[in-house]
Amino acid sequence: MPKISKPLPQELRGISEKSVEEAAARIMEGFRVQTHLFTKDELEGLAMLNNLMSDTIKWVVAERRAKGDSWSQIGSSLGISKQAAQQRFGKKAPAPLVDEDVAISA
Image (cartoon, rainbow, N blue to C red; front, side, top):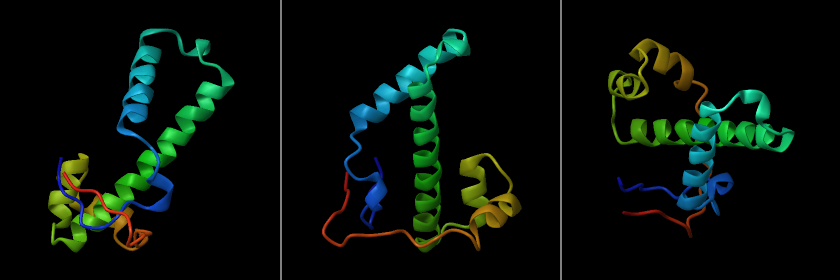
């Protein structure tokens, strides 16, 4: 796992790797069954996970740009063009919310 120089945003703290793995496993299980079997709570959980991933991607893009990655490199990692990456994250990407007391390292 790569080292992250800045602490995680407040919204991402307290989410364990295990809980993310469990959520991902449940999603993959859902693809094997008919989607109408998902409950309202599970749908809300999927929406929350989607928002979490979106926020995480924005945070990592900002971190990678701060470390000098080009828009071409970021776009390639995301499976989009450099122009699409720059348009999506360039001016709108907020600075990560940080707490100087918390950091992640591998």
